[in-house]
Image (cartoon, rainbow, N blue to C red):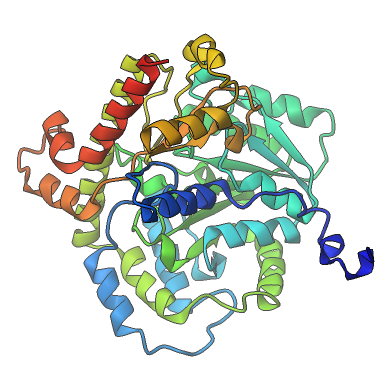
Length: 431
């Protein structure tokens, strides 16, 4: 065999062996099984169940004719809108010049790591793409330990321990909250303590707040309030405006990091050029807000809160150990209590657990090993999104009591989630 004619040997070694993104992989597998006629309940991909707000959809229609390349850093009027949004929500004083627009926050994170030569610090568990991106680029990844009894949240003490041995080493810390995969978030005191450590070691802190607007109590706060000079805020349209497929994300930089923003813009100019013009124009309507957007968010939070509480209650009753979510649309149960029963069926890893669950029940979830854990950690992430978000918002809006929604709402609006929990419970009881 002539190895020079075998293209496999030309693949970048940083890429060889990496599997496609776990969330996209489970979504494609779920769709394939559904196409084969199987009833699959899709709790794998974390895609918002809610429709894009109508005014934002109308704005996209109105700007469908926009065809020009836009500035690399983004449309000025959109950057102004995002700066206003951040200033209103976080009581900050950023300007349009602090904002960078990209085709999804995922792409911006990738070019951030290209532009900044430093190690990546990631609390475990973390979103599935942080570490693979660093590996593709060739950066070192350091997993920061967290613990179930602390809601899998990073502590300032653990961060300090990691940093103190090489205090001047350049590092990027990613803090994602409300968290994917746990749904948990941080208190003000926790954020302040982490911010103090980040300042001590001059860390670049990427605050991934893509789920901030769907924190159930509506009181999300950015750590940028406590470490403004070193924090980049990451957000976008995918999770709170239901527009994942529109591919629009944004980073908001402090003045002190404008050199890094400029370096990222250079990379952008040589790769994706600019973000879709119609999408940028339409996004202004979302970030400008208004009474309709506030009502949409209010009802979204009400729905997600009651669904999260339902999932937590059902999983706990089954015997799983699971933290109560405070935002987003995830729960992260640990099924270690079933380790002996699972082992008798030769199920000893989270991957095998999820595969067997899918084969036996049609419920698709993701293993803890995709989120940074060792293979034998019997945890999993459930994205509680397999319901009709438009119907759920309408039902929630019809409830005029202003009270929290209850299980009767779950039965009406989310029958497939009820079915998923019933199937999972029956399967666990059969072990």
